Image (cartoon, rainbow, N blue to C red; front, side):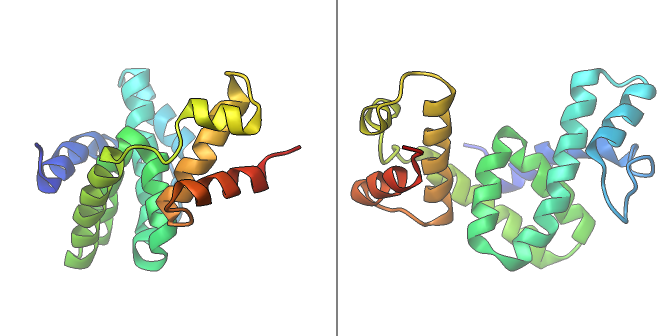
Length: 171
C-alpha cells in the first residue's frame, strides 16, 4: 500500500508539469485549465499529459480554498477528483507551502482510501429499481448523486440513501 506521502510525491510529478504553463494560465491570479493545457501542448507535451497536468493544477487551486474551509465540500471535491486527487493535492500543498496544508492533504488521501474501500449504500441495480431507471445516463447520475451525498456526510444508511434519491428524483 502506498502511503499518503508516496501518493503526494507521485502526484507532484504530474502537477509539476503544470508549473511550466502557469504564466500562460494566469497564475497566480487564477488558473485557466484550458490555457495551461494549450501552453503545455505548444511546447511539445503530449496532449493527454498536458490535459492531465493542467486539470490537476486546476483542481489543486480549488483545494487550496476547500482544505481550509469546508470539510464536507473538500470530501466531495476529493470524490470528484478521482485519479487526479494526489496530483491536485500536491499542487495545493506546494502552492500553500505550509505544514497545515500538507497535513490536510495527507489526511484527505487517507480518507479517500477508506471511503473507496466501503461498499456502496445501494448498488446501481438497487438504485435503478428504486427509481425505475433503465441503464444509461439517468442511472449514472443517480449513482453519482448518492456517492457525492455520502462523501459530504449527508447520508450514512441505506434508508437515508433511499429517501435522498426519491426526494431528488424527477418524477
